Every structure is written in C-alpha cells, then in structure tokens.
Image (tube, rainbow, N blue to C red; front, top):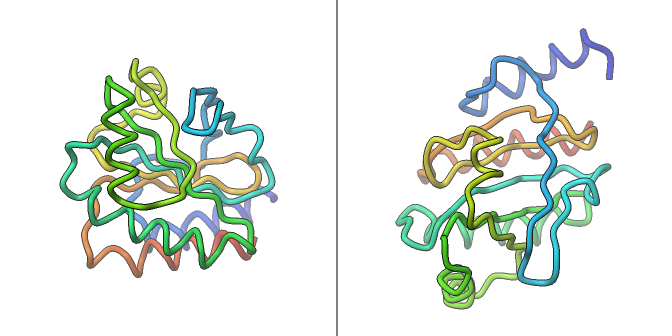
Length: 161
C-alpha cells in the first residue's frame, strides 16, 4: 500500500475507531503461550487481526467476548482472526473465564505484561486492529454497546484492503 493510500485509508478508519496511535505503525511481535499451544502473531500475516487485551476481572470483557465470537464466526472466511490476550497473572483465571463464556477464540497468556507494555495498553479491554500487512491501523480502549457498529465497520473496511 503506498504511503498516500495508507494515509487516506488511515483517515477513513480513524473516523470509526478511537485511535491512540498517531500514525500507522508496525505491530510489535508476539510469541506467547496459548490455550492451544503457542501463539505467534507472525503466523497470521496476510489476515486482519483484532487483537484484544483483557482480564478475567474486567466487567466490559464479559460483554465483549460474545461480540468478538460473533465477529469471528461472521468474518473468518474473509480473513479475520480475533486474538484475545489475557493479562491475568494466573492462567487458570483466564481458562475459567473462557470456559464460562463458551467461546472458541484464540486465547494467549501475557502473565508478565511484557506484550501489553509493548502495545502501550492503558486499560482493559484494549483492542488493536492489525492489517494484512502487519501494521496497526487503529486501537480502542474500553467496550461499550454504542461502539460496536463503528468497530465492526472499521473491521469490514480493513478486510476489503
């Protein structure tokens, strides 16, 4: 994507997403233990990734997980991957939460908080929209019902790229 096209696309996405990044930036590498082995963000290059940092004690996360599962089910065939990174210090808390929620998302564990620090997470949930090129196009902190349609539209637009 050329710089001019990327800038125009970024402006479009910004109108839908609350952005904390001033410009499109490369997503920091992630290699973490996960519920099903190990998670490596590089393995998803070529897909659109909705990366969500969360914790089992997070009340808005209870609402965001069913919504993320719905998105994953609806857009997986178009190239969307939802990755939920738990910031709980004990993996069991995350396992219990995911089991209770009944979701089948990719779940990774950042018990040290190092990856969250690399992404400059300021609260949970915090989400990052990563394009097929491995660049972060937008980020969003919090989860409110009124934000769902804007977030989904931003995902749809990035899937078209």
